[in-house]
Length: 299
Ligand SMILES: Nc1ncnc2c1ncn2[C@@H]1O[C@H](COP(=O)(O)OP(=O)(O)O)[C@@H](O)[C@H]1O
Ligand SMILES: [Mg+2]
Image (tube, rainbow, N blue to C red; front, side, top):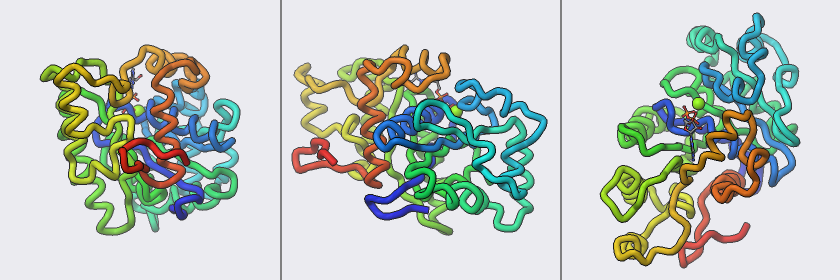
């Protein structure tokens, strides 16, 4: 559950669409949180287990023992299944039978509250100040557990076909429904993997226009992708000289995933690391912070 502005916090990274940079955002956000605060935990709740397998824990993912079942539906201690990724960053690995866990949760007493009761409550603010949950792309008990346990959501999005319905479905089906039963804050909407020019009528531009014109844009669009009317005018007149908005497409980001490392370990010089750092600061403070000029305020 959430604490106040300076306290510990958990956050889910989720969107009802695969390939939208959930896993990439979750691992690098968790790494920056651990870098800034000495420790963090990332929970892989996606049955495809991409994060767990990328990071080299295929044995846990494919094990004959379903450790996620044991923790959420039996008496196992989460500390016994958590593994260390890099200095300060730990992982609660996924298991290939997460689908079975989801089915069992449907019939379990308090089936939506198990991740909170068995993992987040015992560990948050005690073992870890920050917990990040990598969510599955489909609606169901696992997603519900992630949202209930964290009360905070970061929505990643890539400039792929269907990005608008991805955001729309997530807000309308996931967030609005959840809010009928518990508190849920959208901490940020984060475009990733952008590569096109912004002065042309292309998908990257449409995506940035879309998220910057949302009613809640001012509270959920990070500084690294917040564009004002003046910024758009500067872009169209060819005089925009700030770093390009959004998390840009970088081969280092993709290659880091393939190498099984957070971006910081793979290429600490990558210019996009600062975006994950801002996301970490948003999670620490529980919101996006701007000063009057719209610039990021130092914590
Ligand atoms: N900023 C980026 N630059 C380059 N590749 C990226 C970037 N963000 C995400 N990707 C790549 O996009 C693909 C989908 O991302 P992933 O995090 O696996 O999505 P999801 O978890 O939503 O399915 C992956 O191959 C990942 O490496
Ligand atoms: Mg994923």
